[in-house]
Image (cartoon, rainbow, N blue to C red; front, top):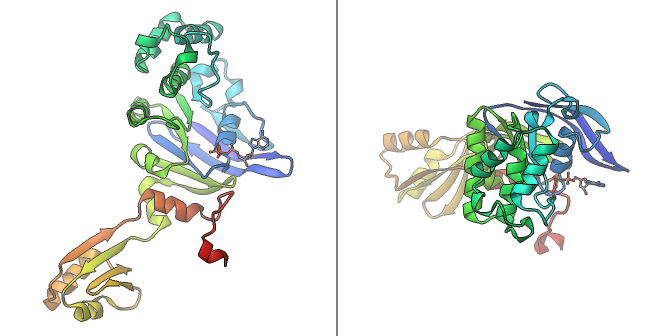
Length: 306
Ligand SMILES: Nc1ncnc2c1ncn2[C@@H]1O[C@H](COP(=O)(O)OP(=O)(O)OP(=O)(O)O)[C@@H](O)[C@H]1O
């Protein structure tokens, strides 16, 4: 379990993390989302005791990370996969890490198996592809058999096979009862992996919610309805609380009325319906909508700038 309370980090007059309070629970994957520069890495570094908060607290399993006598068993992290001595083999790297932290040698073989690096474990890390480097970073994170796993943008730059592998691994780790906290700036990726989301923008909390709850808050569901009897259909769906957008002749986009309601009313009035579709915003759309005021650099449409 990770608990963050009123966590704040300032660099000079810039506030990178601004009074964040949240809990990351075990047994599920929690996505940590935000546009570039939102403060995700800084928050993760403070949770791991690598950066000192300007104010507030962050604890891992009830204590500041650095106060645990067995920190690698409490939390393992992938922050920067490139931070590895490139002249060593994967095996040597993990072995050195295990030796300096009192982790048995047998665990090195176990994690090499978990991340599927056995065939290249004796090769120099310098020759590793990005995906192999990422796997090695994850092996290092898992070395202490940690309760809490923290991964900063683990799928960055990976091919589809690597992305799928990381996604399945995160789910597996969560199903083993671990706390899995993973950052991303890609909503679409999190939709497939995370159950819960913490969304930040400019260092501030925007949403702490389930994936489905996030979509519901971020944008309204609408219903596309089509009928050859356009006028009759229009009269039927117009009323207080509903918004009807005419998309094409006989095709409307309705908010404020459910598909069931529209279907029942049309049936009762004997109006044929040729399409009745619930339109849910994608997670990416919902994310853009929620964070539009919190991105560091906003692109301006040429038409708007005039
Ligand atoms: N050591 C530092 N000194 C000064 N400013 C910093 C430092 N580290 C981070 N920042 C600033 O703090 C803000 C948050 O950065 P952070 O890297 O935590 O964001 P992020 O959400 O992880 O973004 P990204 O996805 O781009 O990595 C940014 O504006 C960044 O420039």
